[in-house]
Amino acid sequence: MAARASTRPRIAAFVLLVACATLLWAGQLRAKPSVSVSEPVPTQLGAWHGEPVPVDSRAIEILETSDVTLMEYRTQPEETPIWFARVSGFGNRAAFHPPELCYVGSHFEVLERGPLTVSVGGVPKQLMRLVITQKDEQFEAWYWFTANGRVTPSYYQQQAWLLWDAIRGKPMSGTLVRISTASDGSKKSADRLLAFVNAWDTAQ
Image: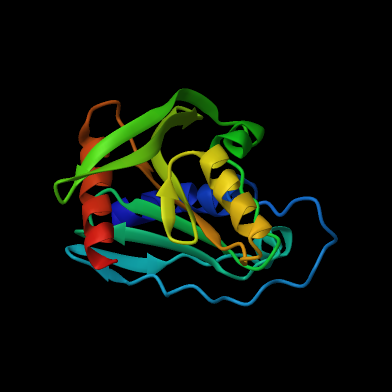
């Protein structure tokens, strides 16, 4: 229980960040929040058990979508958690920004940033990796974008796909998925994230 309690301030920080670190609607008049239409995020992913983290109303107002999911996953109650964030955009208003832009705006320092290829079920998967720090705490985050079922670590590739879909008259549908965990500078955080990605992809 002590380990769980000690992570609550970190969870609160990540909940506050989600409003600007994930989906930002761009270039159009404000509209009512869109209806949640994406598949629910499972609470059980292999050995990982997830608990929902509340999304505050301010985040929904800024994102203009109620389709925001925050979860905290663990394999054991005393183990370091994975924080999962998914924001989905549908209709003709979907535009996404890389998380690091708002991490910096929220006074996180980005120590490392770059593409990462991992093996998931024997298949290469391309992601974007961040190492960030704030107040002597360090975190490792992996993220990827989707656009109508296509997956990419690149914001620019996602935007190109969404633009092409719009030109062809298809609704723009995409997500930003980000997973993060505390890091002590060793490879334990990467191993933890990789185990989660394998469980996530297996469940899809």
